[in-house]
Length: 216
Image (cartoon, rainbow, N blue to C red; front, side):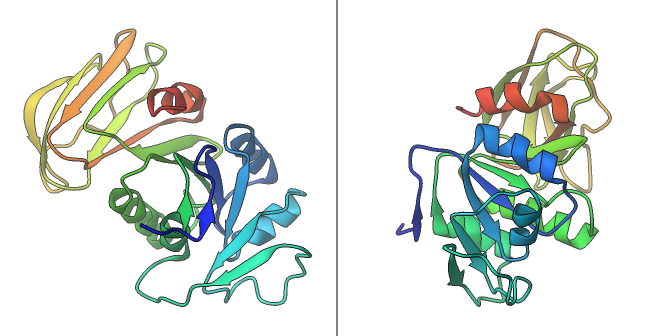
């Protein structure tokens, strides 16, 4: 697939216009220094004193914002969110999304759909939590007692180990069995599912182990 923006060797931070702080954006950039703004996310980048390489989207929010030297790419497709457009347009091994958790619930749910559609690892970050869709097999080293929730975005079969409430080849679904309000109970947490459908949420402090497990 041809992608407009190339960062094949470096993770990319995508900043949106939702709930976030300049400090959170700077934290993301330590791990993913290539910055892309999803339309109005350019406002948060500007507040943080950061300059995105490019602003992508329908550009209805960024308006006449003065961003000297920043490329603007107008992508008017109304069947996709600006976050989805950024993921589709950028070649990168991993993404960190800032400004997509919290704030408006409909925007947050749309961001989860974007994660489900994207096969590459994407971690959404807020000041308190992170979220990502797990690969078919996942192994994480996290502190015992840390909250760890799994929500199936689609029906699937799931096995989990190292959690207070483990599952063995269980049928899970958004309208059936889920695995939220769980916590780490061993040195290693393992997940195996038969389809890429598991939305994992954990505290912000899990960021570095999660990035390591996802290949960075």
